Length: 102
Image (cartoon, rainbow, N blue to C red; front, side, top):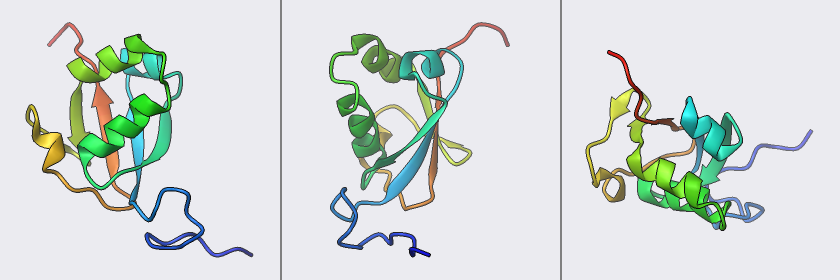
């Protein structure tokens, strides 16, 4: 049985960056084309950039990310906080698009 990859395992294709689960909700899920995915990044902004890079010609997805709220675990991030919030392997980012209602 193969051992799981650790953060700094040379077998990892992401240069040792933490691997984070990104969950998409509602319209963000539609734009992403998946309910969740695992992406590398040292901070929230890098993880979201990896999501955009995996869909290079999808401006709809990039726009959806730009207007969505982001939670790390259950903690909402403020605008532009993504570059300062570090992530660790096993963290979960929740992408919540704007929606009507209360």
